[in-house]
Image (cartoon, rainbow, N blue to C red):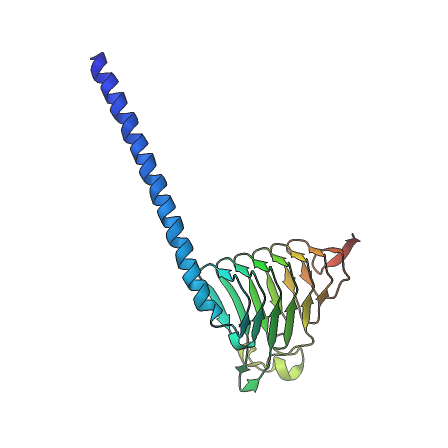
Length: 214
């Protein structure tokens, strides 16, 4: 009986070891498969961009609208479910939006950049997840616009957005039209940025306020 128990334990150990090796091999296989898929997908996305530098890497999916109005530098990195939209014509109104993204830009999951005017993002900028950056509103706040259903109100931009070099934008941040964020600034999570801030700023709150200058 003791010999049977010993053989069973040995068999169980070897089986678990082989199973672990199989899981490890499958994990490596799917990692390599995912990497190759994202490389091919990144090439497809790159071809939709007017001007694009080297080493663009994006994970599936990403939604690009108006790629012929987008310029991207080197080493662009995007995670999943991001929307980058530069609109040309909506409700029979022509827009000539331009989006410029510098080198070494990294954007995490579920972000949205929407442009009808001009958005400039500098070098070495890092976006966390669930960030919204826009240079326009869905209509003006006046009687004429409010008389229309929201979906039929003409888009309106009160100014371009500029995010300078080396800016870190935290989780859930909203950056609204007419805003410039100075270089080396940090924006805290869930901030709503409605005005401009100088370089080396630490920003937080809703609406965002200056916490300190570094």
